[in-house]
Length: 106
Image (cartoon, rainbow, N blue to C red; front, side):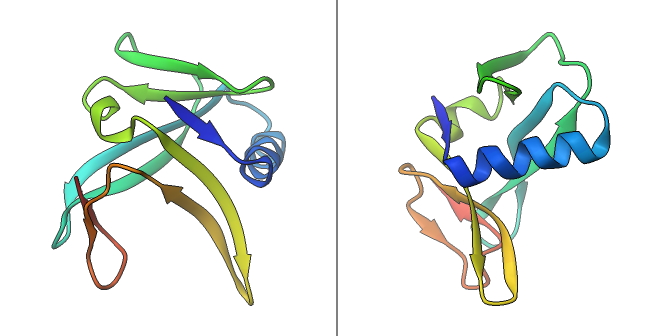
């Protein structure tokens, strides 16, 4: 369902270690922007009853049932380009992204 590149796994493990707690991250979508949906990520200390758990070894990626259909096949990457760095969502279901890159549609 969801996979993570080695660089994303390394960064997530580092962030969880620096934070000092957490089972993993939750990846989801919310309605926003000109294209309709935006990706969201947050730390998870305790999962909800509706979370789907994807085991990534030393941490888990949790996805709520509402977001699951939009994230099937998603690859989470962590990239550095010049002075900028951050997580990138590679989603084969995306049909369009807005010009600023804030939102997408499926």
